[in-house]
Amino acid sequence: MITITKTLCVLIFIISVWAWNDRKIFNGFMHFPFKENRDQSYYRLFTSIFLHGSWLHLLVNLFVLYSFGEAIEYQFIQIFGLTQGRIYFLILFLLSGILADIPTLKKYKDDVHFRSVGASGSISGIMFAYVLFYPWNLLYLYGIIPIPGIVAGIGYIWYSRYAAKKEGGRIDHNAHLFGAIAGLVITILMYPAVLPSFFNQLINGLP
Image 1 (cartoon, rainbow, N blue to C red):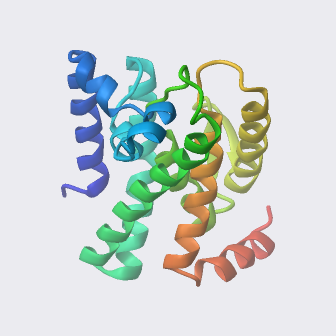
Image 2: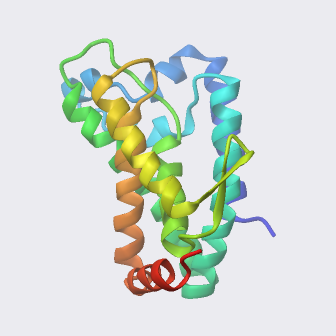
């Protein structure tokens, strides 16, 4: 079955590779707070989700999106039905990515040097929806080290907040942090029953 997750993976791959070969597209689609603040090109909050800076950046994000996206899309379909479940999943993905970039839009609106691309904010939202539904399921750090989802989630938020304050490197850790928070809030608003289920699993499923 062709899922929304698979469709997103294909679109992200095609648009990223296309933009690498056309700098005008890349520069016109990327998240660039300085420019957004001056010419109201807020569409970049959406288009930047589909761009990536390198093959490694692209392939890692596609792997993580596929791994968690298929599970959450299926979960939403089970809850809401095929059409509504897919629509809600797409809203979760897109809205998490857009909301993830808003804090950096405000923070770097006067910084001509700050720019970012990538689906990391959207993927963070999907990952934290997964943690809400399956807090004790094991996630594998670097594909090797098993860590319960709730532990990985807490560590991820702590590290993203710490790294965002340091502002080192070219990775937009603010997007990771706020994408994760957006994913939690959106999932709870869409399906409030996930919250008592989460706490029930947290308590009764304690290893």
